[in-house]
Length: 330
Image 1 (spheres, rainbow, N blue to C red):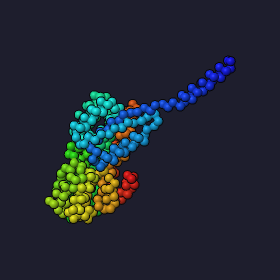
Image 2: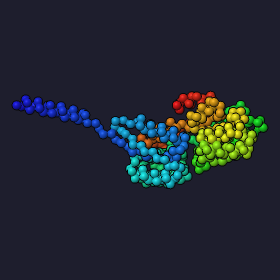
Image 3: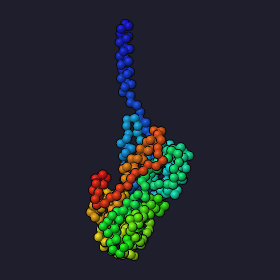
Image 4: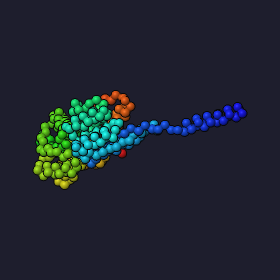
């Protein structure tokens, strides 16, 4: 009888251990709130899609990421409301692409009071608004502007198509409150001047990063200044795409009687650089930046220390390396 009881106990223990082995540890799920300044933006569309895919790629059986991405529709009040919603939902970390860097304090104060770590991306606020458990991930827009100017300065004629000793340009700016727009505008021209080139601004207007506005502004400038315009600087590729439509409409030819520069290295613009219908652009690396933002968010979730500033480099895109950049992007 004792032998039978011992055998039964042994069998029960085996089944017990087997059952324990079959029980999977429930995954820890972190809630991530993301607010993007505007979904209708070429670059930020690439950025947010890559960010979401990268979060998914980092999931394991033990850790999951519940990522909610909201469109602030280029409205600061909407973005503040979204941040309040995320806080009320008890998200574990926030990623914020500010609508207005000048209004950053509205968001950062809310985040600080809630005690939620926050990764600010793409639009750099003043340093004073980046508080505890908060960092900024982006690229230095001064570099992108410098690269635009250097692409022109490295042309055989240095952008002086008519040979009069002065490079006459127009500037299509993004959001004037955005530091990226300010730096790209300033440093593209500074790079030409630093190369010893005399410049003259014929026209400078705000296109708010939008293709249709870029087209309208450049069409207006071409109507007013005609063949005097030698270089068209655009703070981003979307506006450069619009500028190209206006240039075509005016019967001008990029690379022959006018030069066109953008920033972002959208795939269609890299192809245009290869085709000679765009002089150059500057790679704003959405892959490196989005991955760095996700890595920073996860570091906060793991209780790790995160650097206040995390930078990615820009890359010049000209006919010499456009195919290489396209291969990376595709």
